[in-house]
Length: 450
Ligand code: S3P
Image 1 (cartoon, rainbow, N blue to C red):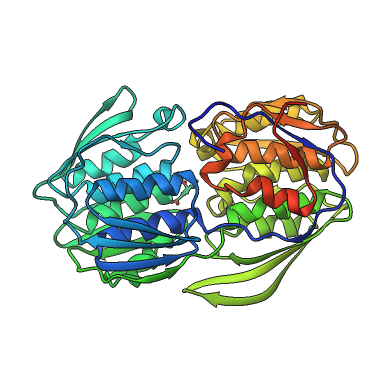
Image 2: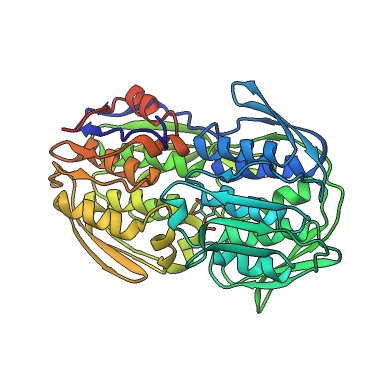
């Protein structure tokens, strides 16, 4: 599957019980950060379990363009020979980050305080997404930007030759913005301070500490105050990337709605800034258990066991939980369709500026499959029909968005009629083995429209 090639129409037909082990790939957020921080360390970082999805491969290629030696040793094992903080070379060509907001925003931060110029672009989805949320704080360091109207890619950044440290209150709950500022702060003298009012995923903070940076987080009345001491020498690390909870969400949710299912999803990172979906599903009455809980590489990990749950109920998902499950709302809306009653999801304005407008993309597709969806600017609500009552039968647009494509294919597994997507190609950005993995559990996926 390619995110750049011809569309790949796919259909998911109602299937029998899903059973077995689902070994999902490495965490996308941690994979991007491993490559970028590896490129900013002095010496060789070794990475196992790297997600080899297109988004991360695009970041690997970008790190090479900035002068790091990035080597694929096969089977998810990679090494990065870094150039040190402030050691990035000026790329000779345009940096194409494909579909990846995380890739482009973190890399912009990483180069913004070096005296080099780089031009960034992406696919039609990425080139429509807002970048000012990152370039505004990067300007405070002294980085200049020229982009398209509305702060869109393609965009050229001229890194600051004499960067200043920054104190920045992140105005939207975004780990990408927080991380871009922290990565820029690496090559600024003095202390860079980032303040976030809502806790977002903290992989950057954890990994910076692991690479030897002086970084601390304090909870104050202002929010989470993160202080980073600039211009450290980062020491190379050995990183074993945990499996991605955002990818685990798909086999877990499928097992909950397909009759007779019992699926084990081993070794899933349960960092509290990421695990909101699983808490929510349990509140809905899902038969979802955490087995063998343990700690791996500084991150909490467990094996997830998901079994068919015919008696789930709609709930009010607390807005305060949104950041910890922001990528999981599309597939949650599918589960909500099979629960009894309304699932209300508030505080989710950010869903409108993801790879697609995810509220709109899911609402249109769910309605076409017989589900009632109400929405406002920052909320939406799905009226569940209960198990056995979801019609299905429609073809849905995936809008170059991997999670929209996968969510509708999960819907088709438990609906009364097949569900198709116009393009399953984007799935390769984050979960390149989705089709084979779901097929091995018992799903009936084919590459053609119904
Ligand atoms: C990510 C942060 C989130 C998330 C994205 C990955 C990251 O984006 O949606 O898939 O790795 O930092 P925002 O920062 O826009 O919320």
